Image (cartoon, rainbow, N blue to C red; front, side):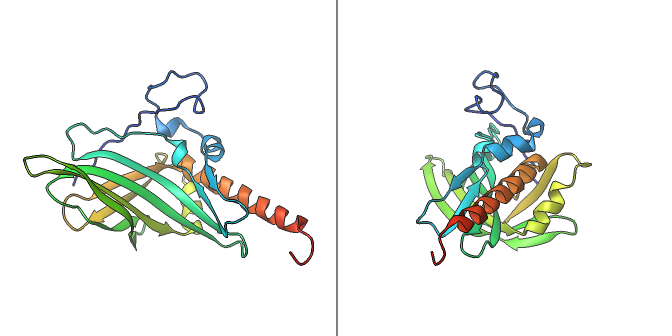
Length: 210
């Protein structure tokens, strides 16, 4: 089983530490919930029925594994708030680039204890380049749904190693073992709560009948 070690080359450190030099390595486990809370991206305006909140800016990163099959992996949390009903949905979003002789076809995700298995949603896939020796650079972008209760339980795991782990099962090729900082879960949930409250406050200010 391939278990790639993760490290992150930060491309824009000004908002991470305010003083670290560009290109320095940052241990994601040193980042705080407030960092992830303040760096979420919010996609919403008056013509959107669903507000989307994403943590991808929390770790602007490249995971470079050198000769290992996985060249680039980016994972983040995405939340969706129905502005009419207030209902919230959650997704773990992962983009994997790798060089191989065929697609890995990631199909399901395992996480939690006891283990929970979720079917993956295929978001995007493409072939970026191929060599004359039969291998190509593939990109698979997938997501799996998680519940708010699962995220809140994981965010309270303060006695662990600071990681929330998951495994993406493939139909062919190696599985991918990934993780997100528990601080990212905590900050993300705080941002979701913040924006849900903002939507409620804005709705209360509307004139009757609107």
